[in-house]
Image (cartoon, rainbow, N blue to C red; front, side, top):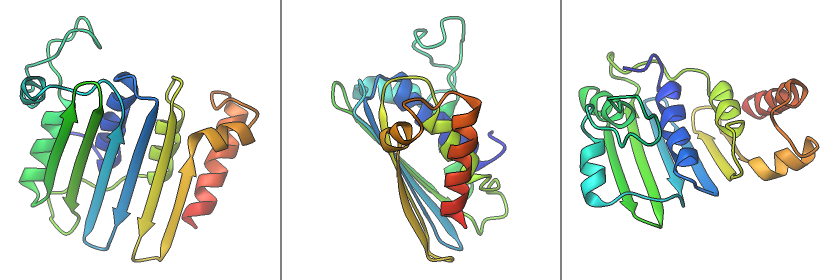
Length: 179
C-alpha cells in the first residue's frame, strides 16, 4: 500500500503521462471527510480486457517496465478505496484515453494520510514529457480553490520545469495558492 494518498495519486497520474497523453486533468476536491480525485487523460486508453487485467496485481504488460512481473498501482487504489469505505471507477477506451475516479473517506481510521498536495502537484507537473496538464484544487473547509496549467507555468518559467531554480519558484507559487 502507498504511504499517503498523494503517493497513490502521483502513481495514477504518472500512468497518464506514460500512456502518451498530451493533455491530463487532475481534479482534487477535498471536504473535511472526503477527498475526491479524478485523473482524466487523452492517452492510448485500454480495452475492457486490458482494464480487467490491470486490476490484477500479478499483471503487467511488460512494456512500461520490461523486467517487472507485477503492476500494483491500480490494485493498490482498489484495495485502499474498498477497505476504507471509499470508491473507485475507471473508464477507458482505446485511442481515446482514461478517466480514473477515486473517492477516499478521510474519516475512516484506516485511510492513509492525505500527504502533501504541494509536493504532489510539483511532482506530477515536472514528470518528463511533452504534455499539458490542468490541476483543479478545491478545499471546501478553507474555501480554497485554484487551477494550475502546466504550459502556462512552463512559459512563465522560461520554457522548462526541470531545473532546480524553476522547481523552487514553482513550489513557492503552489504554496502561495495553498495559503
